[in-house]
Length: 115
Length: 115
Image 1 (cartoon, helix red, strand yellow):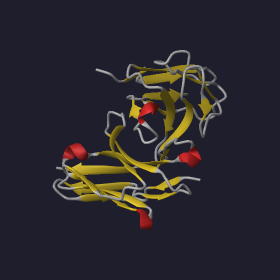
Image 2: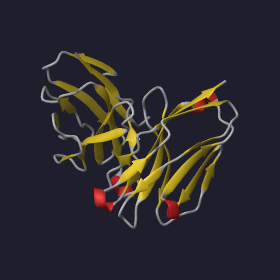
Image 3: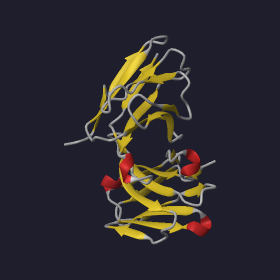
Image 4: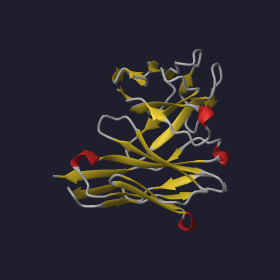
């Protein structure tokens, strides 16, 4: 079975602080895909990044960066110099052949950035 | 602009009534999905459809029904058999030709309240 755990329910930071969101996953698949989505107050989930299991290269996109560690089954997400617009719920998700490539989502982490 | 339209944004119904949530996409995506979101539980898959006139149950299909008569449309009916229908419902789609790691695109959601 596939499982995604986001242990942090809520994180509150002051603007310009860095914030790291943890994501730990479980899967029996050898090839699988990991995703991060952002859900602002408007409700629509916005795709941020995807990562294939065979590509452990970390990625940076502006103030966002992702650290994929296959050895610890983690795919953590860091927002550098946070801004109020980063306030949202962030979801980590996993898909693979054992689940017909349907996405399994974590419970989400609510990030609040205070001015 | 292409996208996914869910209507209405807010829906109120009396217990015992069936209600249908609309989802339309003009992205020419093959696959469409319905998710339910409850506080602290992430997103759970209700039904999905890979092609027209075909659909499969997700993890929590009981009390729901769908149809896929057109590629663009994937309406969800919440029946009176659904024990706890009050929730936020999200529709999503993706282009399967892009491969198994193609991201989901989401609509803005419908918040259903049943009293």
